[in-house]
Amino acid sequence: MKNNFLNRILSLTGCKIPVAVMLLMTVATSCSNELNLSSGKYVIVVPDNATAIEQKAAEEFQRLMTLSVPTAKIEITTDKSAPLTHEILIGATNRSLPTATTDLQRDGFTVQTDHSKLYICGGSRKGTLYGVYSFFETYLGYRLYAPDVLKHPPLRRISVAKGLNDTQIPINTYRCDFYKVALDNEFYADWHKSSESPFIETSEWGMFVHTFNILMPPETYFKEHPEYYALVNGKRQTSQLCLTNPAVLQIIIDELKKRMNERPDALYWSVSQNDTDGNCTCDACKALDEANGTPAGSIITFVNKVAEHFPDKIISTLAYWYSVKPPTQVKPLDNVNIMLAPIGALRHKNMEEFPDQKSFIEGWHSLSNNILLWDYVTNFAHYMAPFPEFYTLQPNIKFFIKNGVVAHFPEGNYTSLNGEFEKLRSYLLAKLMWNPDADVDAEINDFMTGYYEEAAPFIMQYVKMQHDELVKSGVPLAIYQHPYDQYEKGFLRAELLEQYGKFFDDAEASVKDKPDVLLRVQTARLPLTYAIFEIAKRLGAADSRIFETANGAVRAKPAAKAMLQQFLDVCKKANVTALSEGGNPPDGYYNATLAFLEGIK
Image (cartoon, rainbow, N blue to C red; front, side, top):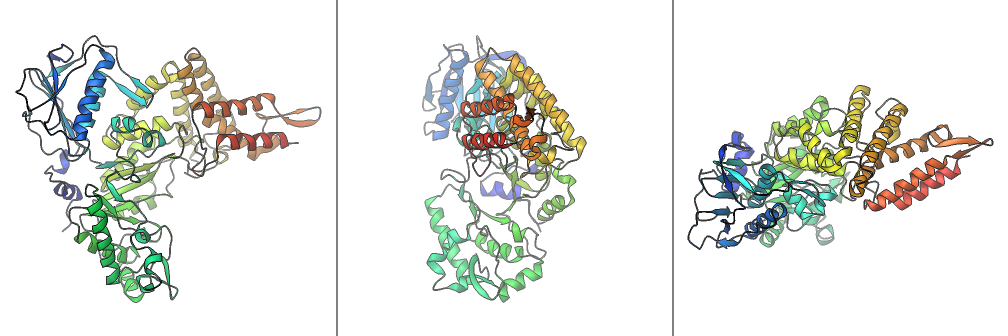
């Protein structure tokens, strides 16, 4: 009988919350009475043995208060002292909550008030800190649109209603907003409740993907024991492991024990195939795979045996490359996490509308409710290319969650700041990973208004028109697509490029006296400029936007060269360092594009 993974993960972390309340948001307020937190009567109280996160949460509460009311700095003390009438209680103090809660897991939190006290308490990981940031965002109107754009109202007093009860527990237990803006700034990531990158030592991941050769280095074992590795075309190779060899299982278990002792707080441990093909075809592995109709048969059988030895950990493995098809005879154990990576999925429609992707995800869900979805949310070949998939993010996330996804890793432009709408997409993804039912239009409008200010209506028209034209055209949108692919019939048609330019002309004019906001608008325009030049490289002299004929010769228009110089200047001001996943720095792009412009005859 298949157990629900959500219940399993709760048992692993000592929690007893049913699935129905994994995202619980109950708010009850009384508008007639308020607590005046800036009255000078309050102290912040933390546990006498406060964790580092609880202490940080208290200090952040203290700091954020003074941003709106500079005179409202509140003393931090511990619950060792006798209770006072007016307290702001941060963390698991010895004071009882007004309304008892079930276990808050690792990242959940509760914000409550009674007649004179405010309580913010969270789960074992960062829940208390998330609770503090959510309090300032939800109840005091603070917004963090970017690491350097924190907006807060100029309040004369800071107050909150009595009788408040707001408890939130995310259904996504792991939510990594894999954009450089979140990866490079801890405050921004924590404000938006983004989990740490799995590639850093402080994350919840002890090991992350493609770990066979890390756990069993060929240079250590292959020479004396080639039988530990894959038999491919009759020859032992180091491409993958032989998963039916009992010595391999024991070595992997022993290595994991050693690593877990070094990282006892890490919950997730990957035991997964190398990033290549060449799975083992020895008689034993082949028999398992043939019985299951897929090479995932031997993988899941092996990983299950590993997971049996570590019931308090999550053992993650990949459904990837040759192992994408789910097995028919073996099911993953409850503490085995299946990592799905729909890298081939198109992005102009919701993923549920593509039969192959739908069957891939639903097929694995039939076996497991413990799935991590490694999604792709940018154009990796062209970080700067327009990529209008904002309105597919929510339906995709909801589809994933409906199909057993409890951890989410949306990979964006992680190697450079300020790729195409990086901050908007990072902001929106964080909201949706925490609460898949968030109002997408409201969140986008809030970001636009706060980040682009007076230019917001024009940029919003640009975003909406791109999306609508993409849908109307039916031209596929892919994550390794050249802008020219959308030129003839898609959302980058010639007449649309002209209209998009007018939107940005109006947007820039509306904030011309605000240098900081103007740079944000100019940064948002970079993808349009990039697309224009990339399309010109395909059209050559036929592109009348870029080239003209003078004295019988074709040449680049002076305005085109000025536009290219402006592109480079804005890239530098915006700290853009790469135009694609593989690099392509702005200086190099400028030189190559200028050479193209001057080489047209």
